[in-house]
Amino acid sequence: MAPSNSTNNNEASTSEQQPPPPVAGPSVNKPVSIPIRDEPKVFFANERTFLSWLNFTVILVGFAIGLFNFGAADDRISRISAIMFISTAILIMLYSLYKFHIRAYKIRKRFMISSSNTTTNTAGLFYDDRVGPTCLCIILAIAMIVNYSCKYIYI
Image (cartoon, rainbow, N blue to C red; front, side, top):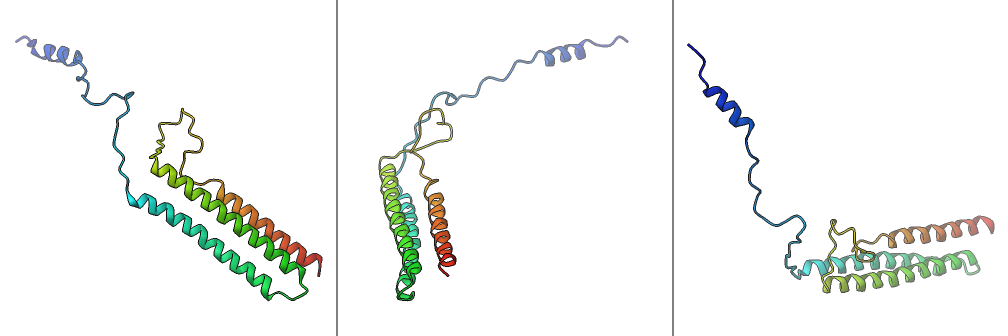
Protein backbone atom coordinates (compact mmCIF):
# COMPACT_ATOMS: atom_id res chain seq x y z
CA MET A 1 0.00 0.00 0.00
CA ALA A 2 1.14 3.47 -0.74
CA PRO A 3 1.33 6.06 2.01
CA SER A 4 -1.52 8.51 2.05
CA ASN A 5 -1.08 12.18 1.33
CA SER A 6 -3.06 13.30 4.38
CA THR A 7 0.02 13.52 6.60
CA ASN A 8 1.79 15.67 4.03
CA ASN A 9 -1.18 18.00 3.86
CA ASN A 10 -1.24 18.37 7.69
CA GLU A 11 2.46 19.25 7.80
CA ALA A 12 2.04 21.86 5.08
CA SER A 13 -0.97 23.45 6.81
CA THR A 14 0.81 23.70 10.21
CA SER A 15 3.93 25.31 8.74
CA GLU A 16 1.83 27.98 6.99
CA GLN A 17 -0.22 29.04 10.02
CA GLN A 18 -1.11 32.68 10.20
CA PRO A 19 -0.36 34.78 13.32
CA PRO A 20 -3.28 35.31 15.69
CA PRO A 21 -5.31 38.48 15.23
CA PRO A 22 -4.23 41.47 17.34
CA VAL A 23 -5.85 41.86 20.74
CA ALA A 24 -8.38 44.64 20.96
CA GLY A 25 -7.57 47.31 23.54
CA PRO A 26 -5.83 50.62 24.08
CA SER A 27 -2.86 51.43 21.92
CA VAL A 28 0.58 51.45 23.48
CA ASN A 29 1.16 55.05 22.40
CA LYS A 30 -2.23 56.32 23.53
CA PRO A 31 -2.42 57.36 27.22
CA VAL A 32 -5.31 56.02 29.23
CA SER A 33 -7.18 58.65 31.20
CA ILE A 34 -8.05 57.49 34.70
CA PRO A 35 -9.81 59.88 37.07
CA ILE A 36 -7.85 60.61 40.26
CA ARG A 37 -9.79 60.64 43.52
CA ASP A 38 -8.97 62.90 46.40
CA GLU A 39 -8.25 60.47 49.20
CA PRO A 40 -7.75 61.79 52.73
CA LYS A 41 -4.98 59.27 53.40
CA VAL A 42 -2.68 61.17 51.02
CA PHE A 43 -3.16 64.42 52.90
CA PHE A 44 -2.75 62.64 56.24
CA ALA A 45 0.49 60.99 55.06
CA ASN A 46 1.85 64.43 54.21
CA GLU A 47 0.83 65.68 57.64
CA ARG A 48 2.40 62.67 59.38
CA THR A 49 5.68 63.34 57.58
CA PHE A 50 5.58 66.98 58.68
CA LEU A 51 4.84 65.99 62.28
CA SER A 52 7.69 63.48 62.34
CA TRP A 53 10.12 66.20 61.23
CA LEU A 54 8.74 68.48 63.94
CA ASN A 55 9.08 65.69 66.51
CA PHE A 56 12.77 65.42 65.68
CA THR A 57 13.27 69.17 65.96
CA VAL A 58 11.55 69.28 69.36
CA ILE A 59 13.93 66.59 70.61
CA LEU A 60 16.88 68.53 69.20
CA VAL A 61 15.71 71.76 70.85
CA GLY A 62 15.29 69.91 74.15
CA PHE A 63 18.86 68.67 73.87
CA ALA A 64 20.08 72.18 73.06
CA ILE A 65 18.19 73.74 75.96
CA GLY A 66 19.70 71.11 78.25
CA LEU A 67 23.15 72.08 77.03
CA PHE A 68 22.38 75.75 77.45
CA ASN A 69 20.80 75.61 80.92
CA PHE A 70 22.72 72.85 82.62
CA GLY A 71 26.20 73.72 81.39
CA ALA A 72 28.54 75.50 83.72
CA ALA A 73 27.96 79.24 84.02
CA ASP A 74 31.30 80.09 82.42
CA ASP A 75 31.24 77.25 79.86
CA ARG A 76 31.31 78.94 76.44
CA ILE A 77 31.48 75.61 74.60
CA SER A 78 28.11 74.36 75.81
CA ARG A 79 26.51 77.70 74.94
CA ILE A 80 28.02 77.72 71.44
CA SER A 81 26.92 74.13 70.88
CA ALA A 82 23.42 74.90 72.17
CA ILE A 83 23.12 77.85 69.82
CA MET A 84 24.29 75.68 66.89
CA PHE A 85 21.76 72.94 67.71
CA ILE A 86 18.92 75.44 68.18
CA SER A 87 19.70 77.15 64.88
CA THR A 88 19.82 73.73 63.19
CA ALA A 89 16.42 72.87 64.67
CA ILE A 90 14.95 76.17 63.47
CA LEU A 91 16.29 75.58 59.96
CA ILE A 92 14.81 72.08 59.95
CA MET A 93 11.45 73.40 61.16
CA LEU A 94 11.34 75.99 58.39
CA TYR A 95 12.41 73.47 55.76
CA SER A 96 9.80 70.93 56.86
CA LEU A 97 7.09 73.61 56.81
CA TYR A 98 8.13 74.58 53.29
CA LYS A 99 8.07 70.96 52.08
CA PHE A 100 4.69 70.38 53.77
CA HIS A 101 3.12 73.29 51.91
CA ILE A 102 4.71 72.33 48.57
CA ARG A 103 3.48 68.75 48.87
CA ALA A 104 0.00 69.87 49.94
CA TYR A 105 -0.17 72.16 46.91
CA LYS A 106 0.91 69.34 44.59
CA ILE A 107 -1.64 66.97 46.12
CA ARG A 108 -4.42 69.56 45.81
CA LYS A 109 -3.53 70.29 42.18
CA ARG A 110 -3.25 66.54 41.48
CA PHE A 111 0.28 66.53 40.15
CA MET A 112 1.19 62.98 39.28
CA ILE A 113 4.49 61.47 38.18
CA SER A 114 4.71 58.14 36.43
CA SER A 115 7.86 56.21 35.65
CA SER A 116 7.04 56.28 31.93
CA ASN A 117 7.01 60.09 31.93
CA THR A 118 10.78 60.48 32.20
CA THR A 119 11.31 62.27 28.88
CA THR A 120 9.61 65.48 29.95
CA ASN A 121 11.02 68.00 32.38
CA THR A 122 9.70 66.79 35.73
CA ALA A 123 12.15 68.53 38.03
CA GLY A 124 10.52 69.40 41.32
CA LEU A 125 7.40 67.30 40.84
CA PHE A 126 8.46 64.26 42.85
CA TYR A 127 6.98 63.81 46.30
CA ASP A 128 10.03 62.22 47.90
CA ASP A 129 12.62 64.32 49.67
CA ARG A 130 16.21 63.73 48.66
CA VAL A 131 17.72 66.98 49.92
CA GLY A 132 16.33 67.34 53.44
CA PRO A 133 17.69 64.22 55.17
CA THR A 134 21.09 64.66 53.54
CA CYS A 135 21.39 68.30 54.61
CA LEU A 136 20.15 67.39 58.09
CA CYS A 137 22.87 64.77 58.52
CA ILE A 138 25.56 67.12 57.23
CA ILE A 139 24.48 70.02 59.48
CA LEU A 140 24.24 67.79 62.55
CA ALA A 141 27.62 66.25 61.81
CA ILE A 142 29.17 69.71 61.53
CA ALA A 143 27.55 70.80 64.81
CA MET A 144 28.82 67.70 66.60
CA ILE A 145 32.33 68.05 65.16
CA VAL A 146 32.46 71.70 66.26
CA ASN A 147 31.19 70.71 69.71
CA TYR A 148 33.78 67.97 70.24
CA SER A 149 36.63 69.92 68.69
CA CYS A 150 35.90 72.95 70.93
CA LYS A 151 35.76 70.65 73.93
CA TYR A 152 39.19 69.19 73.17
CA ILE A 153 40.78 72.52 72.18
CA TYR A 154 39.70 74.37 75.33
CA ILE A 155 40.47 71.57 77.80
